[in-house]
Picture (cartoon, rainbow, N blue to C red):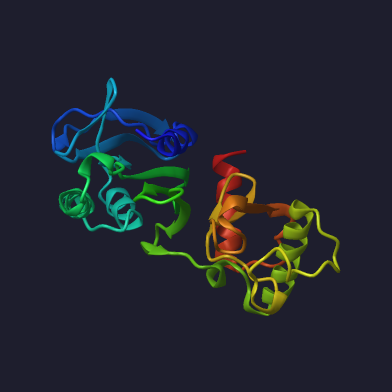
Length: 271
């Protein structure tokens, strides 16, 4: 394993660690969590490439891993899979097979296969918040397919359990309060970034024409609305993710009836 890849994997230890088994698809493992509305367990799916490479006294290969919560609730399981961007377990297996097939082709076509670097793709779904009417899911994707560094993203999905549909900001922010909401969000963003109210956003950030824009990526949590820009969205890769948070007590006059309902329920479930 090269020095660059060792450094990359070390940075991702909490989410992506490799333990080759020699099997194309290893058995999944389950762990039980009793959180919020119903108990659920975390299931892991793991595949490896048949191409192993010797690096001194170590062996290395490409892998695909996905872990996600499952429960006895049909709607819960369907929404988790939707958030993972697949229809069912078979789709997940196909995703892994496709990723590893690309790696296998890369090795087979390389002039010096012994010098190729192992790839990996690690997708992790987890429950951030779960109430009788709201399910919030985080999906973390980490992958390396060669080059100077890997790729990372964390995406949020907020599901209305009464309709089964994902929520967008327009569902929870009143139409006549949109501009006030954006102004509040920009103030919070500038506070986190240590920017004065009149500091231009043209030099360090990728906002179009220097105009602040909200990310589509937001999540309800126990205290407020969390927003995240992933690498390359508004900054260079080396800057990492950018996050800011708006407490619920600053939002009470800006929300739709449904948005207020969600927040009241969150406060009841998580006093």
